[in-house]
Length: 387
Ligand SMILES: Cc1cc2nc3c(=O)[nH]c(=O)nc-3n(C[C@H](O)[C@H](O)[C@H](O)COP(=O)(O)OP(=O)(O)OC[C@H]3O[C@@H](n4cnc5c(N)ncnc54)[C@H](O)[C@@H]3O)c2cc1C
Image (cartoon, rainbow, N blue to C red; front, top):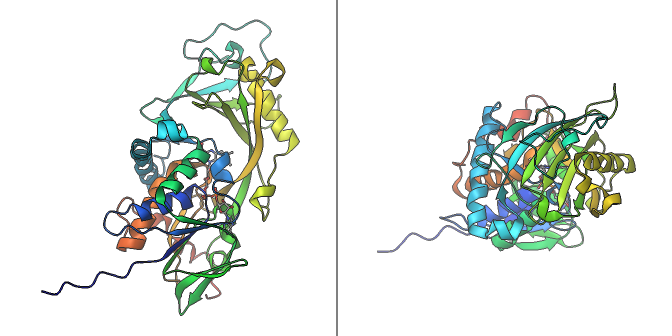
């Protein structure tokens, strides 16, 4: 009996080598029924932007007040656990469960030495928290990865062909995607294209016509403390008012299993530059992060022997309604988009990639309901000029 011919294999091009593009490549290539190894086109280097400079903090239930996001985050938190088991995440990219505390850092160090609160890790100076710290997460509900190493590990495991080049345009014929034009290389043909370009996604006419993506600049520093062995796996969410009447700041402190400590905060709306490689931090913001680090722990003072590893900045990809955009672009068959993950892109990339892989290869996402994330939700708000 003649068997029916196998369906033609699909050529998929993923644009953008951040965590969302890398996870999409991974879940396309590991799809159970139709594994499809994509081509990934990245302008600069994989994980060169927010995906390499983020904190890498993961939380199971911190999005529960928004049902759509809750489903994405819970599915993704669980996938992070599965990925860590499959890819030796503990050794390959610093995956580990963590304790998470909220701390009110006083404007001025107290005049009298403070006695340490029993919840405060030993490396945090007792004077860093005059009020008792609050438990925000336990090792069952919070975890972390090194975001750059995670992105590169999933991308490598996907087996995707990585092309370093700038995608200039999505090529569409009769309402269907046929490829992407890469600067200096011509058209890379494709049956499906995924735009995972973080805050750069909105630069494409085809996206701009439907929704806006903006960038929020945020800063971070990485320090190697004097005694890295003394730093325990406690992530800290701080509230800090540098002086009375000043704007409240909410910096975050993430010790990493490598012995380094990452501190981020200091965000502001700013246009995203063309080239991710040119993004640098502003001196005032970096100086404030050093001040905060020194107030949290004398282990983190460079003048007392902490080593400076990095001072950097990057852009969170933001949408007008605060939800990510994940799905097929209305009116352009075969063109998919995944962006706008704001401050949760490292957490939510696995479920985003898995859902997109199902949508592209099976015609429907099962792991999460993508309806709330569809780009079509913006159509009523923004009039299209046609494709
Ligand atoms: C300071 C900070 C801390 C954060 N901490 C956390 C955290 O703890 N947990 C968490 O879950 N999330 C965190 N985030 C958020 C997270 O980093 C982002 O949501 C996520 O990295 C976005 O990933 P992306 O792949 O969408 O975009 P990006 O990482 O921005 O990647 C986009 C890629 O597209 C490439 N590109 C752009 N234009 C083109 C083109 N024309 N052609 C080809 N390639 C192109 C860029 O070079 C870049 O590599 C943090 C973000 C910041 C800024």
